[in-house]
Image (cartoon, rainbow, N blue to C red):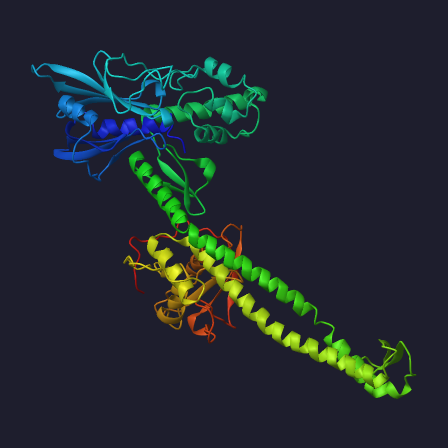
Length: 589
């Protein structure tokens, strides 16, 4: 998600509420391209403290309010020292967004050395790799910036102390807050581009996501060319645009994060209707930004940390699959064994009537209601020797069949287990989860123990949810937890759920001894079982469920493997929105 003009507008509205008329009490520079400014303001008769983060990181420029502090370097950088000198105890007069650009202008009043009231501007330009934080006086002269940009770096605009501040170069776009109807129609509906692209290439601060949302709300197909729309569709899009801009002008923001497959996909300052209902609403744009990037970073970090393990398990799965394929082909080659046994027995019975040197014979098959059957013969052998040859071939194939059947069963079980481990890696949420899966592989002989000092981590625990009707539901995140939940912690009449014939989590619905469990609780537990399985991408998943007392653990089977012969099934969507997950998770049940 781009840090667009609409996001900036929502943040500026929030900053004005918590920072304007507040006094700066502390300025820190925890990173080379980041400021942390502490502001105290009297609100509702109380002195409330807010911390403003301004980051000019080229990879991820951000601005938001936080309640968390950051450690600063022992020696403050020069830019930080300059800010402390000039506005260290200044009062924030206003926070503005020039031209709906990705720019935040913070006006600060302070007293100079002579006691005269002066104004300074702290300008955060949040524009990808060109991001910067610039400090100017009231005449627009640059006093310093967190990044110096000379003519060697940019021939368009220098950002250096002593230079006049110039706004970032315009991109030939209109300010959506000022654009007239005629200008909107002329700019947008003359472009032979898809509707959404025509909007975000014409208006400042509008990202592709917001443009697509705008068109979606109008009911017009986003892929249609803007230049080919009829008058009615143009009016619908313009009305949708006006409604969105009215929300900006009146502060009617609805910050949210939308999720896809349980992971944050996008965020916005307005409700993203186009993404359906899988969205989490917030009261604060700052909270959205913090949660989105924390969850995104956690997800990315866990994928990165578990990449080595994923690669190892993928290799094991591929190896087991190839091994099973070879064994299945070998097993298939034994299908003719019974035919050879019948040939041998019929030749033993009718061999006396077979003439010497015959290449085949036709006899009655008493195993098939006396129908005639042709038996190929080696004409250099007698009928009895041909019978012995067929019996030898039968016995060899039977031995192969018996051995292969056992191997196929073992390899199929191993493949199912390894696929369950691979699925478990999709659900890791912490280092402890990764460690537990690694230890499981070591314990089962699939991996070697690491040498060196072991880092003690918080114990990984199953996921805990509470159904709409107040019943506790627990979800195992790996095979160790699955077995612990199903075979040790669940009671006799607790309900067990699992996606049918596919790798996935064991889900336990705690009944508390009750027998009249609402259907909704069954459905929510089944949805969790479907979601935490390899079928989570499917529109519907079949889920088996039964009482815990019906589960059996076969001797010497892999962790998390159970069998059952009494169960019910339901087909349900792998959709878990609306099911409450308390925080933190309980560690015991």
